[in-house]
Amino acid sequence: MSERTVLVIDDDIDLVEIIRVTLEREKMKVIDAQNGERGFALAKERHPDLVLLDVMMGTIDEGFQVAYKLRGEPLTKDIPIIMMSAVGERTGFTFDKSRDADFLPVSEFLEKPVSPRKLVDMVRKHLPTTT
Amino acid sequence: MRPEQHLSQEASLFASASSLRRRLDWFNRLRWGAVAVLLAAVTVLGGFTIIPLPVGPTLWVAGILALVNLGYTVRNRLLPARAVRTEIRIVKLEMACDLVLLTVVLNLTGGVENPFMYLYVLHVVIAALLFKGREVFQITWLAIALFTGEVLGEHLGLLPHHHLLGASTLTHETRYIVAVLGSFWFVMLSGAYVGASIMRHNRTIRDELVVRQGELLKADVAMRDFFRFVAHEVKSPVNTARSAIEATLEIHGGEVAPGARDLLERARGRLDQATEMVKDLSDLTRSAVLRNELPAPVDLAAVAARALDEQREPAAATGQRLLLRAPTDGPIMVTTSEGAVAKILGNLVSNAVRYNRPGGPVTVTVARLADGARLEVADEGIGIAPEEQGRVFDEFYRTAAAQQRTSLGTGLGLPIVHRLVSELGGAVVLRSALGQGTTVTVDLPAAAPAGSGGGGSK
Image 1 (spheres, rainbow over the protein chains, first blue to last red):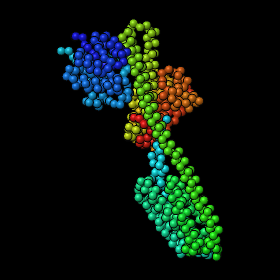
Image 2: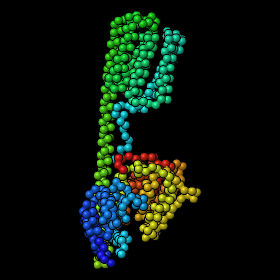
Image 3: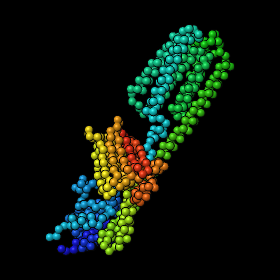
Image 4: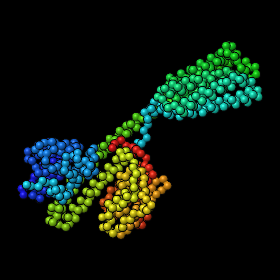
């Protein structure tokens, strides 16, 4: 099984390091971007196996905008996206995974604080199976 | 700060159309009183010829007054209020009509000889209450003109004079007439001036209050927005630190000495507490629960069962029993906010479990009241000292015994309960004895007030 690449798009570099340490231990490669624009460019350029995306970066919904852009781009439209947001965060959107899944182009929501075990389970679940 | 009552925009004008209507109702009653007094005076004084009143014409005037007043009353009760300006114009017409009738009555009852001429002043006072500056003087000048015309008309023989006191000739005494008119003009004009000034002052204060309230509401919204921003800013570093500790424990847990591991776990607990605190605070500062949620029928026992279920794990850790008591003859439903009830019970049950004695029971009782329902959460735990019972609903207050039991706890649970219960139109009572346990009783009305509570943000 070849090394999998996960792109983390989050402006909190400490959290990025935590995710890096956690995922590298699972033999995955982590690349990162601290804003949506750079993240989108990196996704097109490196075509990662999965994207971990923070909802609230520069603006309260930057994450959602990045998700829509990734889905609209042929190069990246099939990459699974896990979206991260703080528990009970009032972003102006109240989203309910069961209800809004059809409208939001993401595979799963992961609540902060991110638990390493949950993170690994979720990433494994959504990584595409190798052919 | 929660400004709940909004001063209406019309209040800044001086009166709303509907409040004007209520005052007019009162004036109509006064007018019925005038009709009654007039009839009584004619019957008693005129009928027994104590004072020689012209009975026939006076009865006519009383009849006309009764008739127009009937018209006013019917209009007031049956027709919807129109724009304030229109209503004011109608009131001015009614008042002018009253003044004309008063002048006719005065003419019939002795003119300048009748001491009731000062009834005109009453109209000026009422005008000052209802109208603004210039309008008060319009009514005043009309009254002055009518009275002066009446007095001079009689004096000059243009109008008939009805003697009030035998064959008195006061009406032909020029010096007396001048004195009466002089004092009358003075009292009327100064009365109008003082009345209008006082009311102008009152209206200025009122305008200022309306403006101030608008500013307060804006400041309240800004404060909530700022709080939300701060909460998010605080939450992020706390979450990241917690994740870092958890990752350390999970990845390097085996290499860490037991003492260090214990310290990391304590740190994790305190960070959880900080997260809870931010969550609780945002519950506390959030505007009314029902603002965005219409009251709906809620099965209280079902919500209570879920609240107990959530505490099953910590309760089991100390051997506590969780009991739910609810009547068996069907569910107890109240029309309220399910989210708010769930939070109320969630807070109360988690408090009960946290401060209970090991192995003690936590009992939630759901009962029907004549006009609502009662929720009761009881434990047999550490209890609250009498001198502390008044303070446990204060933000961040934690009793000495609670702090001794655990450093984890936000001191915000009961304030949230208190706030939510009052938003739902209910009441909360706490009974407790140190070392014996605490019982919190929440009474909820059958239907929560819709759109209750205030605040400007969602």
